[in-house]
Image (cartoon, rainbow, N blue to C red; front, side):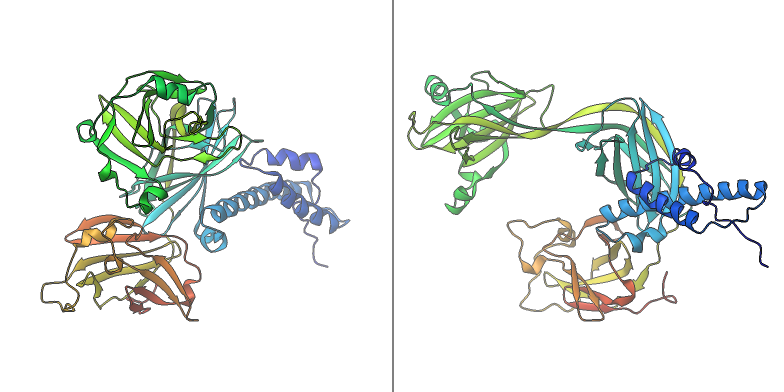
Amino acid sequence: MRPYHKHPLEDLTDNQLDDMMQYMFNFTEENREHIITKFEQARDVAKTKRPHKKIAAIALAGAMVFLVGFTNMDRIQQLYSKYFDGNASQISQYAEVIKKSSTDQGIRMDLLTAVNDGGDTYLFFDLVDETGDRLSENTRIAENWRLEGGKDLGGGNCELLEYDGKTKTAAFAAHSIGGRPGEEAVFTLNSFLSKKVFDIDAKEIDIFDLATKNQGQFKDYRESGGYGGSLSQEAAHKNFSLKDVDQVLEKDAIHLAIPGYDKGYISNIGYKDGLLHVQLNPDKEKGNEFSWLRLKNPQTGDIVDPYYYVLYEQDGLKYREYAFPIGELTKKNLDYIFNFVGFYFDTVVEGKWEVRFRVPTHMDTIQIASDEPILIDGKAVEIKKLTISPLSISFSLAEKAALSPLPPEEPARSIISGFFRGGLSDEADDGSDLNVTVVYKDGSKDVRAKFGGIGRQLGNYNGWQEARISGPIMNLEDIVGIEINGTLFRLKPVNGGNQ
């Protein structure tokens, strides 16, 4: 008769199961339900014959390893699915579970996992407030973090994925350029921010009374260091331009505090040519990330946005001036209240959280032979190092020599660095776009970049611009090739296939 081998979960009580769970950070009720299901299954198939106590002890240790691994992979799947838009199963097979922690100021940082696609490194980590309530769904990590070492790591961004108020845990993904597999790297966080959103109705301010008592003086806009602003759709449709703005209010003619709003004050107000001008001066010490002034009908709640606003700087202060179309300066036309909306960032905690780890092995990639030039703005451009990974498409490009064939009807209009402007400009047209598309065997296509924004520029090496388009790419085995500006580079793996 074959010996009976007991399931490692068979004899655990509910209390023992709860005791084991304390060893797993980032544990959720959903995880617990998964594990209890396994636990109950083990009980159902229990046998009457029992093994030796020593074997039972080994089995218990094995059960802990099983549950920890199960819980962490479940957590990784959740985070990968959220960050990589549901493609967790394809990507998490390359994940490396790190499970290292650093604690400061009563907040623990748990570095959970990392993945590398050969060009970029992605880290996933939690912040857990063990002593207070300083985290929220508005927590942001801006500039005060670094991912260094690992040969060439640097730059990138950090994104909040989710916040759990019950466990006071905020989950983040950090995306950094570079990283060589096997090299030691250091992830350091020095502070995090909380995004404060405001929507304030200044009912105490009588706009008509304020405007009639303070007939603001105007001065030339160009003398004010004017440098930006925006237009309403109405202004744009009337062919109005910021270039048409010739005057703005004098700065700091008044100093009117706004009840409930401590990020600035009304520094001037005036009326000219059917427009009510309101100048807002942010407080110099507290700063202001973004604010927007509107008129609001107190009875109906209807909103009137400014016809245009201009932004300029003087004496280290950034002024915003809003111009509202009201017609004549009458009580009826100004039966509104001021409505201030926007957000700003406050530093919540400063400290030092630091974890060392090794950059994980990178994913399998496909390198495609690209021996044909493409045409951009009528110029022949060479493509090389065209590589596909489950997370990105990367390539290098450079203009060919002057002898390269150019269509006579397509005169050259731009230099290659213009391909990386990251969005449309007023001068952009279809001829200056760089369109990158994934082509599959069934004939379907997945457009990855167009309209001049191709992800980002990684560098300029000996005249070659290096580009990367980030974003999960499903089913690499079904790809026929990559189409760039109408030229299809078919799958012709070099150097023996996958790299």
